[in-house]
Image (cartoon, rainbow, N blue to C red; front, side, top):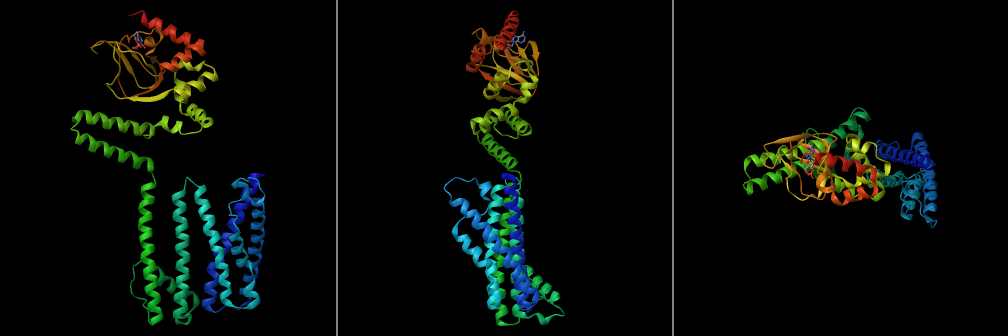
Length: 423
Ligand code: CMP
């Protein structure tokens, strides 16, 4: 029901946009050409009055909803604004004044309806996050073409339609003059002949410079915004490079840092997953965490038999960490504050001096549990062999797991005891 209402509202707004645009195109051209008293124009006025009167009733209805002292969601109210001022605009645009008084200029009251169109566009852009930039361009093109049409009609009014062989050619020449003046190209093949035309041309030129500046500014900002994540990443890398040079960080270390950022960009698009998740409301947080951590839940055998409650809890608590090749994740003898699960990459358990490799662990394995289970220092060093995507579980959460999920705790403990035997 709500969806139907919403679709109807939008369809109606689209119809009003079309009608207002049509009126904004047709009225000036008919006035310039001198067709204001033709029968077609009378029909046109009558249809305009009918459509805009129905719109007035529709908007009255929407206002009535808003006046009742209860909250109506924006979707149900429809996207039109409900302020009283708008109803006056709607009323003026709907009045059949040009039919009653036969004064051509009264038709321009219909132009008020374009304010509504501007309002629909604003609302549409607010709702549309994904293609906001494309919409911005499309709306700009709409207003630009409409303005060009009006300016061309103004030029035609000054120059007179009789100058060319037919109305269509006259209009096309006028539009050609407008576009070349607005775009500041100005070939100079159509030039002002009278004082009025010269003044008009100067006005259009000044307007054109503004439009041109707007286009240049906006195109640059739209291009920069096409991929904001990448732009942000490149800015970060640039800042980092400046810092590394300033602090004379040795080239091999610089290379490792750069490689790390490149990997981060490739893997997670440089988003700090934890921050993104924790900025969400709690209800969304768990679901998003579950989705993001599905890789670890799927790859670590320990989690596969675990119940739903455990998975939901652990998904929220584990934080993703990346290690680069050669990094020491643990050093033998350290105190244990956390353990890791491997979702990608390989690590090796090595002796204190790093020369002897005891065992290699890979996707789905976990390590660092001995120090936590037995409350003792790390038995060995652990070193990343390749880029490793790991999930870190801190001691506090680990202790909670031991208490709340005895089955999982038993499995981790058994593994710890088995590995400990060799030491
Ligand atoms: P911890 O002692 O906390 O830190 C080093 C980790 O290396 C250790 O926990 C285990 O998770 C892991 N580890 C140590 N020895 C072995 C082994 N023989 N096989 C597999 N993993 C081990």
